[in-house]
Length: 79
Image 1 (cartoon, one colour):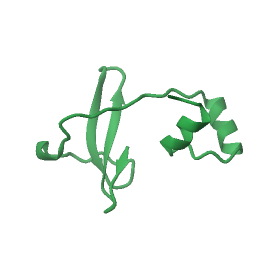
Image 2 (image 1 turned 60 degrees about the vertical axis):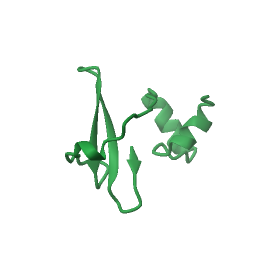
Image 3 (image 1 turned 120 degrees about the vertical axis):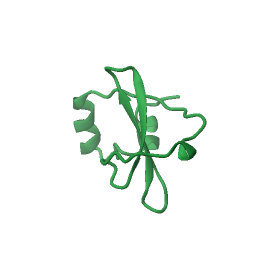
């Protein structure tokens, strides 16, 4: 998810059953508000990372911010 400075962000939601990604606006990180076509980016590059629940527990114990993509990339040594 991308959050802008004014508190409104763009949220990408992977819909596994449909094999697609939904793009919505969000103000809380959880809500899904419609977004007009002129605010959609022409192209979106994203990565999906699956993490086992046991890893989350360990990461929390070690103080890793699981909401911070940079922290996840560093923790798992991803390229």
